[in-house]
Length: 495
Image (cartoon, rainbow, N blue to C red; front, side, top):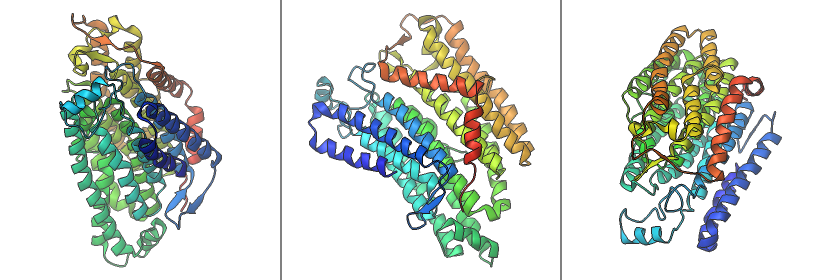
């Protein structure tokens, strides 16, 4: 975490002192080097179990697994951020986030092909927050991590080069709703502190054993903190921001956010509910049962009516959050391992799917309306086949990582006594296959419109990112054993 946060600080200094023409290359090299170095350090720490930073940070199996996965996914995301070939202005980001859309200042910067380089230090700070979030060992550190990962994302969502007003609207919605969610979390944390007299999870758990009155204060606090965390994973009924933000943000940021934020938020939820609040699992499990069912059903049903590919993937993301919650209620080591594997597999699929979206274009930029995807398989068979692979993985078709992921979470839920959730999940997955296959049929069995779609030719950056996502999707579907074994070895929280 120190390496990543340090890279973010150095990136700010680069913005201040390095000449503009060299900034982009320096920031890309700095970000990739920092993420690679941090990953090496995570690997070196494998098997470590310590509580540091005056009890506020816990380094254990789940934390290291999630941190390593975040770093790998963020490393791939930087490939998409660095892409300069497919966008007329140089990259997908506005040349100056502070310029008014359509202003003379923006027009001049676009003509000069000025590149947005602040995205790299912002993304490093967000990654640092994502690494701290699942490792936080007390409520205050968890809140700080929540804010550190969220604030840069609010800014990044408003930086799209095209459709600036839609992008800024998405950023404003995300910021306002995120501020409310953070307020709920910290208010709930104050209630739990009032009950337990401590912010540390171990001491909160010890106070639960006594249960000397004030149960109302405790349960109110748990419910309010759940609001803040369920908001970050896009669970129903706190999901309304997800489709708007996913649609309006630069697609590269959407991919980064969809893959990494969900992973970090689920890691934080596991640590809070399993380590700090495990003693009252019978109180919060019914709530999560209801949330899991609503999230799966609403995500899939609403996705059926979507005509925008990014909004469809957003509701798909909501539904996948519900699938993960089916295992979450089991509260055992098998559930932890299943969630860890699912998050890693889902991250690669999501990055690849959104990266493909950046390449399908029309005169206005990205062609996100489904009608523009008709006949894509005839114009670019390889790209359409790759996107079809990602859709099949999201649907949970065998021989893809999505199938293994769903199998693991449903198995964990079944063995944890949540059979009704498994039944709902299987039925919802069957319905979900319809809209995923619908897009595949549209790409391969429909005639392309005369004006499109066109496929941009990416540089090695985007090509490599999509290739890694596709290979990971196949390998984790055919040979999931090594990652499953690693997840099982990591599935033990230090207390």
